[in-house]
Length: 331
Ligand SMILES: Cc1cc2nc3c(=O)[nH]c(=O)nc-3n(C[C@H](O)[C@H](O)[C@H](O)COP(=O)(O)OP(=O)(O)OC[C@H]3O[C@@H](n4cnc5c(N)ncnc54)[C@H](O)[C@@H]3O)c2cc1C
Image 1 (cartoon, rainbow, N blue to C red):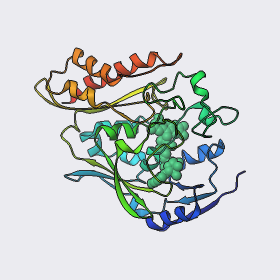
Image 2 (image 1 turned 60 degrees about the horizontal axis):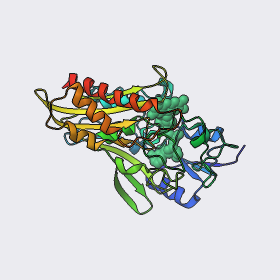
Image 3 (image 1 turned 90 degrees about the vertical axis):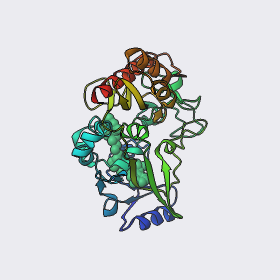
């Protein structure tokens, strides 16, 4: 048993000050479905926990705005997934939540915690004796010569090929979402696409957040691309599994021609992966199986496979193609 202190905060700023004062071994606690999990595995060993669940201002969400959808960081995945307007006008966002985890987990898990969930790499979660630069900087990466069926094809480095596992962040990146973050010096806004870092030589630094930064809310600009969108997720079984490959796609079409397109891919990269070049291939052209395939191959451009995960390049290409066809039917 690793001893830790526990306290509840009464306001967002109090929580930020508490974590800033308690030092680097402190963690915010939301639903606990990632944090407790990793504490039981001895991968996370916080000396202090700041429970943010009583911060009412972080709980609410509102999808009725004319310029943006606003989600408090503590909004629960199940509540947001079931929101009727989201399901109708932004199916990609709703589906990314429905297709994640299980109903029990979604009832507990918050959107803010979801964004900051950590990799499912078995060498990271397995602890000693496996080398893991993310868990223990400088120790090496056992995945490089290990079983790498589930590891990243895009964005990896010699130090780390762990996949970013979340679904919601992939859909949010496709919609140009932003997060508002409260730190000791006040509030600032970060584009979701800039939140997660590629591992490079420092895989233990996963985001651009400072340790005492609190995610307050997620904001998604209202867009005509919402309705013709989907989050398509391919996994080893139909439910309750992380993505082998996923694609968040949104389209705006006139007749058969693409006016605007958004493509982000998940399950295959070290961070949520926006495929802007692939989007440009589609704009101004008819969406056919050929143009969809061309865009999908572009989305996977630069993919590097190890001995066990090469099949997921073609799988990811087909996932993007299928997602584009699903979205087209909704246009
Ligand atoms: C068995 C299992 C299967 C799963 N399957 C999927 C899946 O298919 N797809 C998917 O996307 N996810 C999946 N998940 C992950 C799950 O969705 C996340 O664990 C959950 O969303 C985390 O939210 P939480 O509120 O429980 O976070 P917590 O565990 O409370 O926190 C997670 C991390 O975020 C930090 N944090 C939390 N809130 C904030 C905040 N507001 N500001 C700053 N830091 C914060 C915490 O300090 C901690 O480091 C699965 C989890 C499990 C256990």
